[in-house]
Length: 63
Image 1 (cartoon, rainbow, N blue to C red):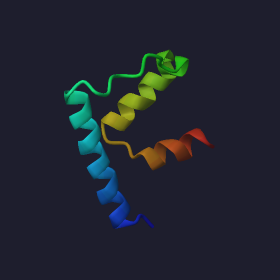
Image 2: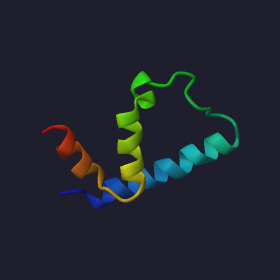
Image 3: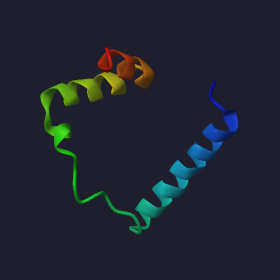
């Protein structure tokens, strides 16, 4: 079960990170994992963006 307080804390972190990025204090990581360039990874990321739950994707990958 997901703790509602943990979700609130996480969303507050996102706002903080976005603010730091806007002020140019945080920048994008200079390195990117190589697996992000694999076609199958790009397909999986697109599925998540289009509404697949992350849990479903993890279960499917681990089968």
